[in-house]
Length: 150
Image (tube, rainbow, N blue to C red; front, top):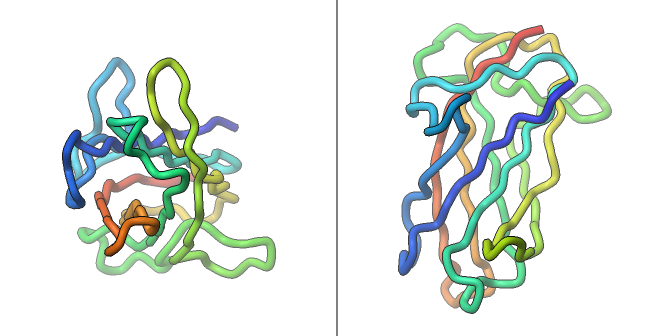
């Protein structure tokens, strides 16, 4: 069992738009949009967002997670590899993360998703980070892909 991190960064001075980052590669850099890491049974996926400015960072960020079959996989039987404790497929999840500051970085880390196995395939995570304390709310998004095995 291992944890697969997915870390996004909000660009400095950006009032909404695209996040950078995603799933890191071994040895540095990030996977390109059409590839990613492989989750195995009992691995966890943890999403974090780094904010560029501790002074203007909100106390909380809302994370909207949409899991779906990868766009290049038309006949994949499952839309999401994640299921809840009742065996229901989780395609949409809304979570909140509190601001933390460590080593000069402002970070929001969301609760992890556990892959329970049995949903081999190619998936996409559409992730939206929202500062809902702003009026109107500010949103940033990215949609990296990943694979699962047994």
